[in-house]
Length: 151
Image 1 (cartoon, rainbow, N blue to C red):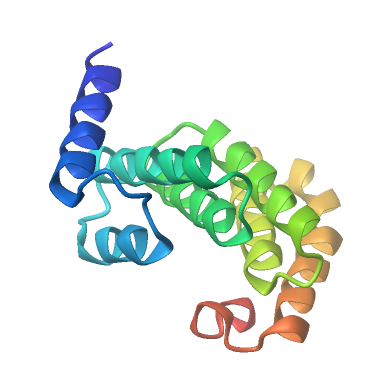
Image 2: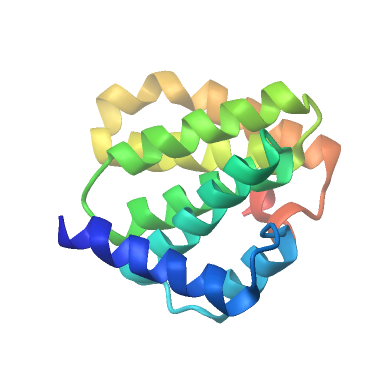
């Protein structure tokens, strides 16, 4: 309950600080680039993105940013559900744009991290889909995430 209250207050503060206009991807990126990767700050990013989605409707740039946020929330914590949510958002990104390098990149990245959590035997089945996602990301934009698929 405290988490929800904190998120609400932070979102309210952000909206009050910038006026009543819609949140842009530039606003979200500015926030993301200046935060320490703590759960509280990442949850604030999530709230900003969800508010922007509510204002503008489905948007590929916003949805992949939500996938990125869930990836980092999964990295920070022990809740593997964030990786599932990341995959869902990446899937939505790819549905909106089947040539979204960022969508394929985050889907592959989150599938891989989920595989690490599940263990070697359960993750054997995801090797091919992860490879396909990362190759697709490279095909559509070799510079995505500063060459992240190559890493």
